[in-house]
Image (cartoon, rainbow, N blue to C red; front, top):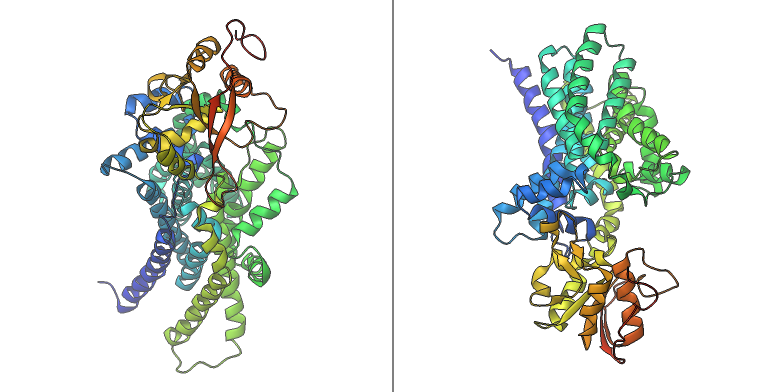
Length: 516
């Protein structure tokens, strides 16, 4: 029979988990329909709408690291006959809400329910968590998997020996969602060392890690051959370390940030919690930054899951501070439950103040301007200006992502350069005609719409792709710009230009050099 105190404790624990989950869900849903997809979301959208065999074929050449996520999103988008941005982002919203609840569960288990409540709420109001909660990519789901694996690790340290298989399963699925989540195992190894785990625990953990390695090995082998996809990443420096630290605190600037740093330092004194939260917060970013000094693979989003450690430490620090202050105060009544409630509510109020102080930052993040580009912008222009049968060029070829994300806007247009679509060719953006064929197709066009990235027609740069070089050369030599359309206020992303022929095409070699 469950005692009254045990039942009350269970209810308190449940509330401490449920409230942050609900708050994160509300914050994630707030503004989730902000508008158009940006380039990475567009990749998720167009790949997930392919058939499973088409997705499988694509993964052999590109984006293997996101394979499981694409298959998951394939099932999600299939539910809605006309899927859009909101459906695309809902799994991330749910992943972020689950992470907030798991962070709260960790705090409640490692310290007390009010620490869990505060930690979960701090996670929910952190701008970085809110940002990725509204992005149609895998990172919020990876964060949920890492937090769940960490909670299982704590259970295992507490003696739940039979849960190793579930720990290994959760870690394996999380790493298949994004292979750099494997660094959570480094954090867990440090936790086991700091907790002075016994040989039996290390042995079981080692077996789980071995199983994860076997599952992950094929993905690692394939993704290594696709490493050029992240060739644009720079070597991280001290600025990257400062940025990720600021991103991990509920407010990146002002007194909220510095107060958070102080509370993190205080939280390190809560040993049972700090040996779990400290490595989770520090080890994955530190290891990835270290590796990136030799081979750059670091980006803040790749270690989003490490964010979970920071609110746990801040909440533990707040609990220690409350304990020191509480010893000098007399609360009405004498029982513990009467003393705890005002402290817990005071902590909730402090989190609310931190959220309100950075509310403008949250609001700005819910506008398309915070992403690198907005593909809906150029699609609106295309729907308004391009008519059925009009020839279109995408310069460079990756500008085609706007048509893939919003195909209705380009319905009926003739893609002059496309030879084989992405789904049929097993590529992201399709295969284009060779230089000779492309020049022949352009020779028959008196006017052509060009969806152009800002950098493609300016400066002295020369496109690396032969087809893009032909597009640029022919447009510059034989056509003149008649119209240019850009979304009002747009500072990034492709524009739509109409070019008309001013000179007849010449037979013979291609402009600006050989075609072959």
